Image (cartoon, rainbow, N blue to C red; front, side, top):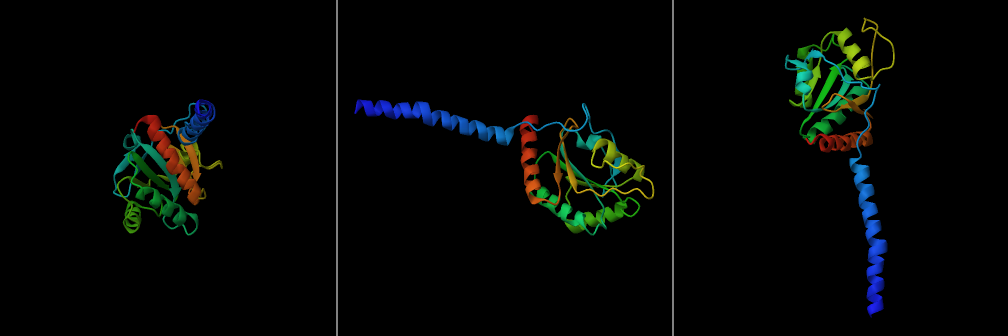
Length: 204
């Protein structure tokens, strides 16, 4: 009887507890492992100033202390944009605190403030989601040099065009922490998980 109890406690101490600790450690590591910082060394998303769907100026000040999900789109896009924006609506519906979505148009000539407001009203876009327009040269420069979502050369001129389905995750320090395919549900789930990791990292 005594020997069987010794064996019982031995099994718990030597086998069950270590495997349990190992399993918990692996789970924590997979769920809360710190996200990498992407882009060139010391790269930070820089200053900007554009107008949103409420005709209000939006700049780095609006992003202060927030986790940002950024992307480029245009309201008349017939292909990837509807799916991408639909997936962002699902993200918005999760009501994530301290998270802002910022969608920059690639077609500012057509996407006026009024056009963006109509789009926002039609799609139920809330206050935590900016639809942004402005000078094309500035918008395209921001995409290429700050968000790093387009590797092609361009000057934002009349024939220049950016079309990307990428979402960019930016932390409160303005560091890029992830890229995601906006039309992929699995990638959107990964994005939601990574947002939670940043909340833990920055105690938001």
